[in-house]
Each structure stands twice: as C-alpha cells, then as structure tokens.
Length: 231
Image 1 (cartoon, rainbow, N blue to C red):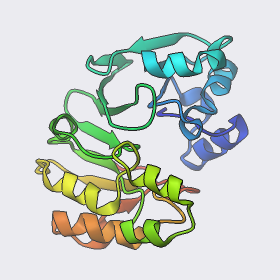
Image 2 (image 1 turned 90 degrees about the horizontal axis):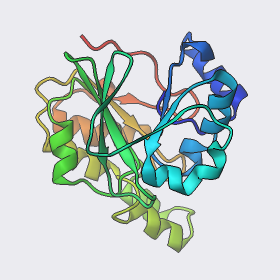
Image 3 (image 1 turned 135 degrees about the horizontal axis):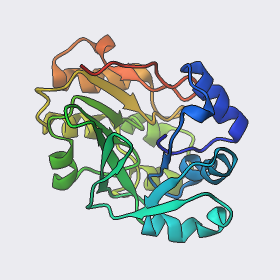
Image 4 (image 1 turned 120 degrees about the horizontal axis):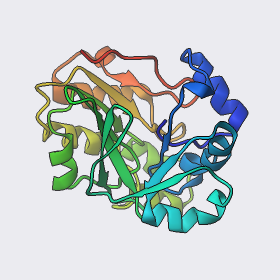
C-alpha cells in the first residue's frame, strides 16, 4: 500500500470498496511525512503487523510515530528495493518535506509510475517515468482557479511554488516530454477540491496524448479509482 493518511476504520472501508481486506496488504511504502500521507501508517502497521518502508529523512521527521510500530525499513531514493515480487524504484522529487520520494512499481515486464506532491518536474523525474505502462500523475490545481480561489496568499504561494504541487498544465508539459509509446492508462491524481475540476485535468492531459478526454482517469478524493489492468 502506498501511503496511508486515514484512520484504520476509513482505510478498511476504502480497501473494501476495491474488494480487499487489511490482511491482503503486505507492506506500506511512504512518500513523505505530511499527515495526509503518513497520518495513519503507524496505527495500521501496528494493528496488522505490517512492515513500513520510508526514507531516512521521512523517518527522522516522524520517528516518534513509529516507536511501537512493526519493522521499519529505510531506503535511499536512488536505490531500488523489492517487496515480495514487486520491484520498487524510488526517486526524489521537489516538495516541501524532509526527503520526499515517489515510485515506479514493476514486475520485470510492466511498470507503473506514480508522481504526486511535486512542485515541478526535473530531468531525473522524466527519465524515471519514461516508457511506463501506466501513470498516476498529479494534477493538483488549475492556475487560474488557485489564483482566484479561497486560499490565503501564503498558501497559494506554497501550492504554486517549486516545492508545492503540479498544476494541470505543468503535468501536461511533463507528460509531453515522456516516451509514452507503452502507455495504457493515465490517472490524474491529487486534485484539489477547491482549485481544480476533473474536466480541466482531463482536457490538459488528453491534449498532449491526442486522446479522448474520457480516456483519462480521475482519482477522486472520496472514491479513488477502480482497478485497471496493465497488459
């Protein structure tokens, strides 16, 4: 499981929506220490006896949460590791956290790339996400909606900054620089409920891929998204 920002009961409810139970989870991999990503990790790990994987920086900023947790593994953002049959390739991203990481998950034949919580793209990010079979890509906000929206000025500046979150057009520009010849699925993720709309994210990404807008999936805040098969 990638991140866990919910209480145990809510996490179990969300797993059930996908036909899973907590016992189906074998480990938790953490991107960074912000509460919406790590807030439920330690409790879920303790209850279900799950190992947790996170960077040295993420652990150092949240070590008190894991005093009674199960096994904690620390990884380097530039070294791959495996959990069961899944190879995990972490990579660093610009975000306002201690040592944030994002991931590409693979089985030797197919690759699923995940990128959220990044203020801008980098050549290393793009090299890592090249030729993925599926992508979960942050489309946090629409620039105009954020500018004219309800957030206070300081928060607007943080979200739009180089260590904040990718907007729709920035995500589209990143996608345009990738080799997408293997791409079977794209999910727009981490959409702000105050500063973005699903059709704006779909419009930006579909324009780059020259596909129908409805082909772009949306990770909804409440429902997430359904299973996708990567062939």
